[in-house]
Length: 311
Image 1 (cartoon, helix red, strand yellow):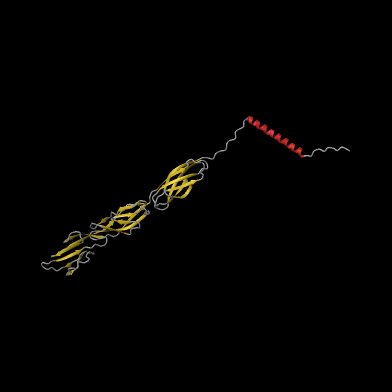
Image 2 (cartoon, rainbow, N blue to C red; image 1 turned 90 degrees about the vertical axis):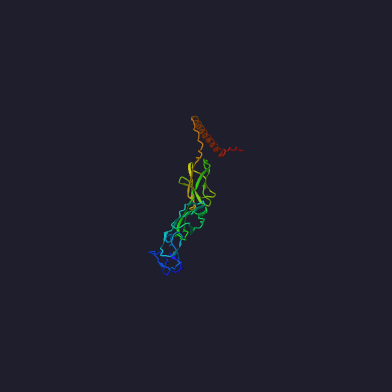
């Protein structure tokens, strides 16, 4: 507490009265019919606020005028003054807009508030904190201060806002669902994620990777398999985020049954009659081969000579 410079005190002083002991004394002259008017001002230290006057002064405004027509005693009360604010989390892909709704401790209302050190992308207007839907997931901090009706200001309070990753979902389909032997199959994954998010899809047959890190374009990713082994394959698509703005997700499972390779036509079994006929044909073929061999030998020799007659 301090006294205004005019009128000057005749003895003592009321100046910066608030240190240990908290007592200041001053003597003022009194002229009959013209008492001295002294104005006192209460100034809180940082982190504190003026609360109220007592004794010869009253009220909660920070100044008080005292008429010194007799010995007067005035007391000023101060309280700790602080502010806190708790803000809910946001989600990537959804614009953030929340009233600051700070809670002051101490001070005299009405209060005004100011923020400093706002992260890039955040803005504050009319007591509302805002950020666009494209604000990256993460933890953002800034400071908040409150000022009361008497001009007392709190120490800056730390405020943190968390923007969480957006949830995603994936749906898988296959074409055809029952491929023939050696027929290719195309697996298509539809991924639901917010605009601006990026990621890839792995296509899995159990633990076997059919296609890895297929980029998601327009919410779609596909995997063509030239040939599945015969039998049943249980395939699932797994979305893998490209950054921290989205969470991963697994699709439904799709069962594809590939046909086996066609088998060769069986040779019909021969009965007793067939076996006998086969034996006759084999014997006839052998005899024919011997005769043809003999003919070739005769034709290959020279014809016998006819003896000449004598003249």
